[in-house]
Amino acid sequence: MAVRFPFTQWISPRQPPEVERLLKSAATREEVLSLAGGLPGEDLFPRVALAEALEEVMREHGREALQYQWPEGYGPLREQVAAMLRDRGVDVAQDELPITSGAQQALDLLARLLLRPGDALGIESPTYVAAIEVFGLQRPRMVPLARGEDGLDLEAVRALMRGAEKSLLYLAPAGHNPSGSSLSAGACESLVELSRAHDALIIEDDAYGRIQFEEPRRPLRSYAGAEERVILVGTFSKALTPGLRVGWIVAPPVVTAQLVLLKGIADLQTNTLGQMALSSYLERHDLDAHVARCLPRYRERRDAMLQSLAEHMPAEVRWTRPTCGFSVWVMLPEALAADALLARAIEAGVAFEPGAAFFPVDAPHNYLRLSFSNQTPDRITEAVARLGKALRAV
Image (cartoon, rainbow, N blue to C red; front, side, top):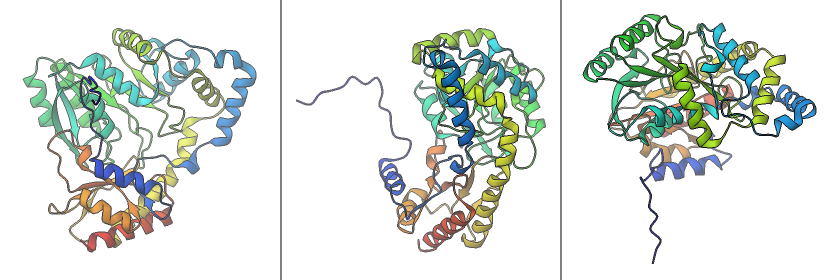
């Protein structure tokens, strides 16, 4: 007799099983150029500097680095992150800033703390796939808020806030994934005003906040009146490296105290060695200077993709021109399904991310995401040419 496991819920893969199988297969084939997965450029990692930081920590502070720490995180690193945020206009004290194992854990802790089954959650549509997954585990009622290159549907935000006694929103104001857009200062001011008027909370995902191609963007949390209404989630994954798995949360002290308790229950702490190595790196290197060195390379890759799309896509295909982030969001004709296109594209030697998983509800199937961040311009040009050929063969 087969064992019946008492799952409290069934967790579905982020893509349909056939899409997952195709993407995993493509990842093992050297001849396939992958535009799937929003990965930072591996050639841009400061490997030598991080190796020196790790060596220094082990040499000078090895016992401490290999021992347990407190759930709230390594004190010097928390102060360094607080200082970096102050430079971006966010006034934060150390006791308002716990360290997490990446931004993903930050979202998980906030979802568990702030959401109950059936609660209304305002969430951008489309949005970051893993955020949909982590919030979905709490079984809220997801209310889609249309978001794209032209901004956020503020009327839908108003309707949600007016219709709920209390509401929670998940937004990426300064770096939306997948559209590659950022909200205007006026839109950010309106969001803060609405949250204060209607007793709403906003979780701000700032993962791409530093990856801006045109002008710096302030976090929503930096706007006047946002201190008690906006909970900021950040990470070193996009600006430095995801391998260290270090993120943070900025929240009012009453929220932070609960998050620290929940963090201790979840995993005791974020790894000590990684935190201390990162702190050592930040003592000796300017993160802003590192980002400034990376941005021209990312901009070059974005421009190569945009130029190649213009040359190789059929006339009825549309796409965004990202001002931030790692990806371009592409809309196919309604009659075409990105899932069905993927197999043909992989046979042509290119992989992409079908877009249906980026929608919290009522997902259309004619969108796809193309990530340019971890490929050279020449490979991007060739990959888009292959995709265009596959599309024309449909």
